[in-house]
Image 1 (cartoon, one colour):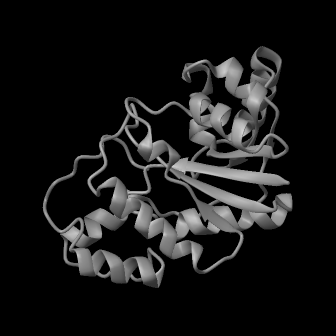
Image 2: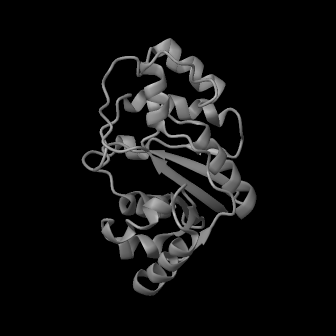
Length: 207
């Protein structure tokens, strides 16, 4: 089985996430796509609770039987590192080939990852070109990471939608509709829970 992995804060999950996941499933012929909501990420502070972010991901899994979500990172105490998640997944699913989806902006940060060389041994990566990133530069970075870390990666042919979670939160705080930014079931849930409607921008970087 080939399993795609998509980690992130998902605060909230939006149509850009869904499109990237669907494109990866189709282009790489993955058997499934597993969403991994962060528990205590070292670089962000989520606004929605872990329970709420998990529920929003469960809702989008209703729309595609190839989607799955796990709370394994939410249940882990302390700072969440990708290498720990990969090791656990290898233990639980030893026969699965793991392919981790990242944006090209994250690819440049790979050398700063906790035990990056161990991550490279546990998975391959599929890279989504971010708006503004130079294609040649990304390809050169892929080659550099292969040489220095043994990281095998491929570049997906389709870029993601120009949507971020911060755009969704800003729209809500400004009283604007989010129906074109998130799946309908997620929009309904956000409205029911009255999420992100206070002027509290706790996330430290755009996700």
